[in-house]
Length: 612
Image (tube, rainbow, N blue to C red):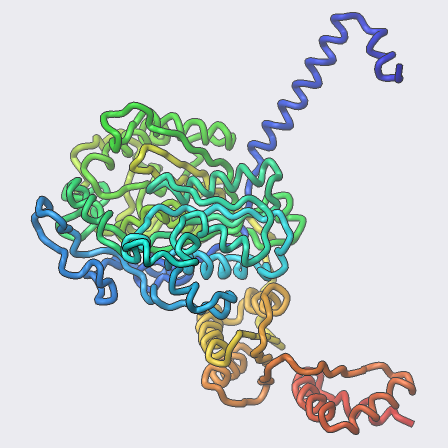
């Protein structure tokens, strides 16, 4: 008998029971704390209509009250010629406008080590998710190749099967790449394979709530330590007419081609497309690792409508129950939430039901002077379905960063099918600052699937330590790509960033991340500048493919050249011998020319002068 067993034997049955209860209480407390542990958002990326190819561009679109809905573009041949204002016509669709992203047919397969033949069989949704996930990891300062062998999970919301429709046919058309090209499971699976990730990898299909459901599952995986890092998001492209025809027959699409969320003149949803991805990590791990934290997810959840008025009819009771459950899980009171990014599709059936549920939970105890602001991204970019929840989540982070809600477009007359007076809710018609408060600002995000699956999340602002302003250089910016044209394109992107960022503290951080937090490829350029203006000049040169002061260009793949800076006589003699070799001398002089501008003296002259 060990000491523990002997000690327990000496206790009375009542004392033993009390000790057992205390242990169970501690276990329950630990489990409860784990369930409430905040999840940090450390990176995000997106591609949405209207040129919103990054969160910064997405913010420009939203805060600029942009409506990125257009006529069907010419490259969507499967949709051409099918429009008819009469949705009862067989095989016709009443969609005339939607939110389309550009260049869905463009893909750098070589970058991802994918053959041209395999790339042609890939659903463009796979390509989009690969590219945007890569960008999100780089935004988090994580070189993707460093994740190989880690328990990084991938959770992808994906619903549409358009590519299978337009590439389908007889059995003779089935190739070796058919299943890997069109099956939804390969959207996350291909990313996990490419990067060598060994955490969970799953496609999530809950219709329009797919991506926010994926985020919820990613948070659960992190809290149970099944994953150490999680990549979560969703993707949707409109490539085939089948779903659009179905929505036309159901009377769900807007004849006017405008989404009017919560408005009296709302006449239906407008479809949209895009992709969004966030990189998630447990908050304590993100703080430990020194990650930049964009915001934290305090609570997430999902449920089903159960038996409602119809298979596709929302259930206000289920939505209300989900709100309360997520608030309880997060330990947050409804009145502490400042803004709610609603599902808000612009339909006369769904919008009033959603407003009712939000008002019951979040609107109580509000005053007209301090309402809960509520809006939706769908009037700007359309209903992106499987990517709708992630679009709302990225918008929520942008709201927290800006400290204000963007204007809600196409909102002129509040819907009379909801009682606004006394509801505690209000829709921002212009840029609206979040109310001043002692604690952090919080934003709620909702996403509801047509099949009845509801998802909800609470996002909280994270206050990082203030950065000291760093206006002076030098700035050392290393750039690399897998081809010379790609390097020039990268320089253009950096030129835009430097021009917009100015000379604030983040510019030096960005240069550091470019070197330490990015994967490095064969075609390279290193830019050294003392001022942001000089850095912009150097970037112009790289973008145009020409040489300039402060720019070193080249490609890797040859023998490495080492520059010894030791002052010992033996090291200096070795340096003199190496400088006598033409190959070493050429590269050493290039490095020395760059270092002269920063250090103000020549390494070669210093070493040569020390040689006895």
